[in-house]
Image 1 (cartoon, rainbow, N blue to C red):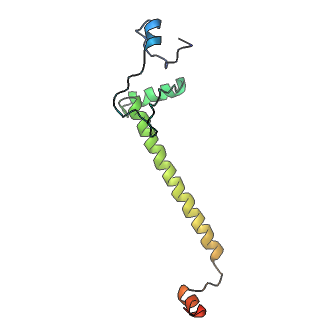
Image 2: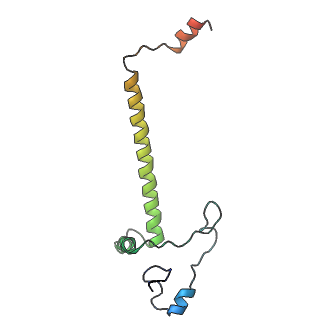
Length: 115
């Protein structure tokens, strides 16, 4: 099973020949990427498979797909929060640079230029 492209524990009740012929089942468009290609099965490796099993056993997710979807949503939230924090930090930095400088209002500038 070492050279098998399937994840650990895949097809324990199948013979080696049947296991090597087994293909993932794709139904509908739910497995299509934005480019229209089929997504492939991912071998995460034993440590991550164990973590997924632990999440499922604790009842946080019903299956591996649900656990991965939850993880992707959480990562997206974290990235959005980090981006917002970085923008806020940049704005604060620029405001600090502007403090103490003399600024002309838009209306004053229009008067000076004769508009």
